[in-house]
Image 1 (cartoon, rainbow, N blue to C red):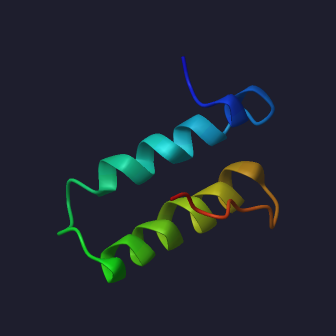
Image 2: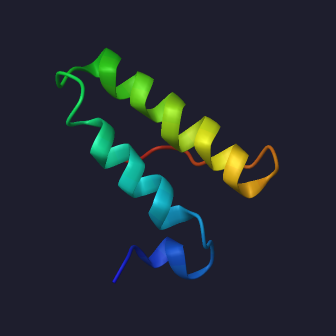
Length: 59
C-alpha cells in the first residue's frame, strides 16, 4: 500500500521511494534534503510525468 496521492498519480509512489532511498546515500542535513528533493521530487517527477508537473516535496 502506498501513499494516498499515489491513487491519483501513478508516479507518486515511485518518486517517493527514490526520494527515501537517496537518504541512505547522503548525510542528513537541510542541504542534502534540498538536493534529494531536486533530484526526485522535482526532476524525476517531471521526467516520469512527461511534463513540467513536479511535486512540492514533503515534511
